[in-house]
Length: 187
Image (tube, rainbow, N blue to C red; front, side, top):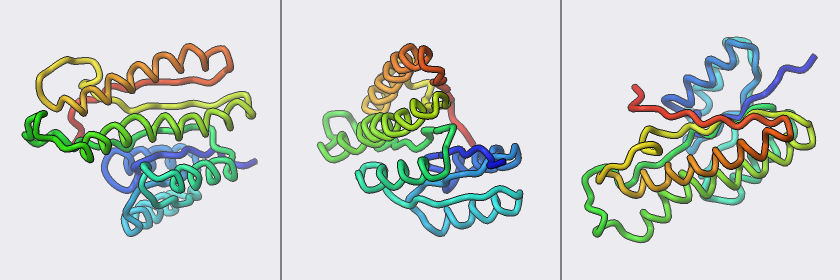
C-alpha cells in the first residue's frame, strides 16, 4: 500500500522543516519545496533517515513554473495534504508604509496570498478528483489583529484569512478540509 503524501511549501528550514519531519515520523512521504537546494537536500536526508520517501521542488512561488512543478509532483505522488507554509515579511523591519516601493508590495501579496491561492486551486482540483484532501494554510496572529506595524504583511494575512474561511465553506460540501492556523512568533 502506497503511503500518503504531504506537500509543504517553504520546507527547507524552520517551521516547514519541522512539519516535514513530523509528517515523516507519522508515515507520510513528503514533497519538499523551497528556494535553496542545499537546504532541501539536507531536510530530504533527514526525512529519508526516518524512513519516508521525498521529492524536491526547488523554486520561487512567484513563478508559474514553480507552481506547475509543484502541481505535477502532487499529482504524480497522489498528494492528500497541502500545507501552505511559505511567507514573506518584506515590510516588517521598520520601513514606514509610505517608503515601501511597488516591488516590495507586489512581493508580499504575491508570496503571502496570490501564489498561495494559485497553488491551492491547482491542488484543490486534484483533491476534487480524488474526492478528499486537506489544505492547511499557516497564517499569523497578524491575520486576526489590527495594528499600525507591518501593514502589508497584515493586509496579506487578512486576505489569507478571508480566502481560507470562504474556501472552507465551499470545500466542506466536497469532503475537502480547509484549515487556517494562526501562529504567533515561532522559534
